[in-house]
Length: 240
Image (cartoon, rainbow, N blue to C red):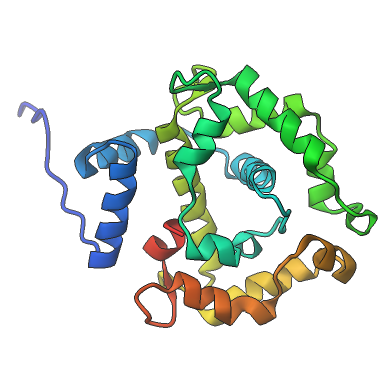
């Protein structure tokens, strides 16, 4: 029997913008691109529940935002998010109160308790997914937030775990948004995502929480479309 090699090379072809975006992300968390790819390949073998992750990330996104936006995948892309990269490091440091490089359940509970106390949804939003989320206890919110990112199941999360979990989720978002499966999200697909969400939330609630409408889709696409080709690539979507 032929002896298996200790390692094999893998060629990955990316556009220059995607390569640069990936390099920037891994550098921000102190990894090389090779190390990040090995980690992602290893993590791909860990089973994930997309439904659970989607539910959890919506809670995290809502908790991290001073103005609650919406629960739909595409409607969660705000103009602020499109024009500036998510500050994962800053958000993580705010939760890591003892500065040990980990966020444990007690630190997450403290954060979620504070966030829950600041949420004040109008009555027009009663019955929506947003209202259901914030009817949960801080303990439930904290547990879901830890579970979402805790790849090694040690009961606490690192910055690299948070970034990796969010990148996986955004990639799933992109797949859901790319309805014709051509590898890009077009203006029509973006508008369709907004309209779907608008149908689930009353106009009064949308106005109260500052939820974007399909009419804002061209503006948001322009913000995300960094190479100016009139559509959103996976790299552009994940890196917003």
